[in-house]
Length: 250
Image 1: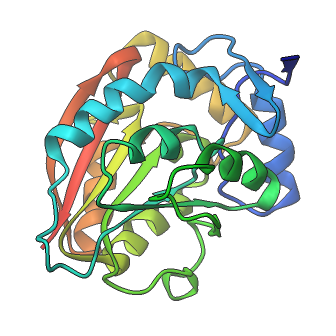
Image 2: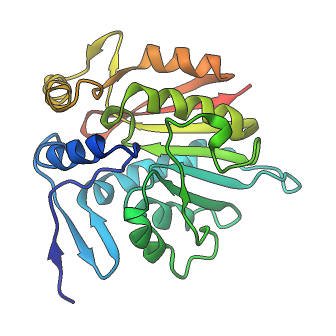
């Protein structure tokens, strides 16, 4: 099969503005899991992001360990993924949770073809990705209140405006049922400081391209979570200087 190399480092889109799309293209050249050059390739309609291939197994191990399985009679059995990107994570994670339905979303339709291609043959992935901008008002989210057992968001908070993170938390508080969980993966500041020099340099590079981007401080994320009725239960260290933050709905 012929593989066509695409611009480096695919990034999930969380804003519908032309300026944001242009900035994401520019940032392709320097942002990745290891804060260096990265690539992704195309296999038919399936886009393969190298970063997603690297982090999918560590994230899945977290989900296997911490995701609370709903009771058999529970109505909420949907896992909502915000900023699904290529669709690789949905395809990989969903196979470990056959009794739950994985619902991918993206802020533009540009990656819908890849998401749909990855979902082919997997019966517990919703066959139609949802158009969802995390920064939009929560009442505009195309997801029913309290209809989800979990929300998963990978590598979005640092490559989007702060409003997208605020929306992610507020929206999760709306769509999660009682006891539902929010999993956020990515690099973060802790107590106002980067955890490594590479993360500090990464943050500077992001802000140089767009002043509204950058690594978020865990304390600020926690404060937004509290406003949405969410409390953080875990902050897990992950490979490549990343974290997984796990919140639950009171």
